[in-house]
Length: 163
Image 1 (cartoon, rainbow, N blue to C red):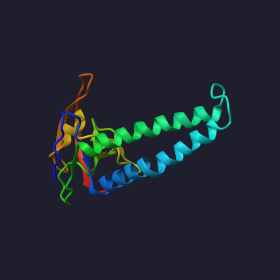
Image 2 (image 1 turned 90 degrees about the vertical axis):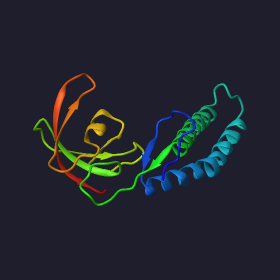
Image 3 (image 1 turned 90 degrees about the horizontal axis):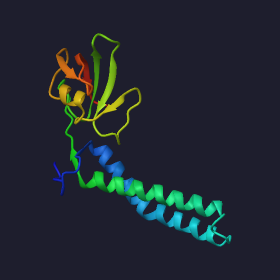
Image 4 (image 1 turned 120 degrees about the horizontal axis):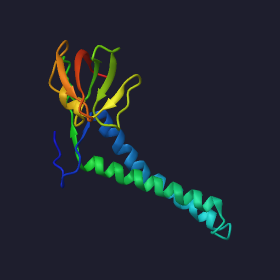
């Protein structure tokens, strides 16, 4: 399922699990979170002089960080592509990919949104140069990858699996 963005905003590749988690986080922050921060600000105001009131400034900082996170979540939820992960050995969003770059030790990456984290795997977006180079290839294939600073690297796909 694809939701088409209203503007040319970045499309976030999300699994169904990540989408649900982000929706729940957004709901929690816009309800319980906002109420709790408003209460903290009100209690701090009751302490008096706001210019030197550490509790007030801390609560306002917390409010600012929370509102930033809410805006970020809204951007993701307005511009996402739900990835369909199958069991095949084809590299694509929503998969863990282990590669060897120029013969170095194998490294494992999760190909998807930075909002999804997997222990033992760095996150690589499908839009990144390496993500684009790997996407659509299979185990044991070697792909050529040009780094952002122009170096040409050889990447061998060792394994592809579901998280």
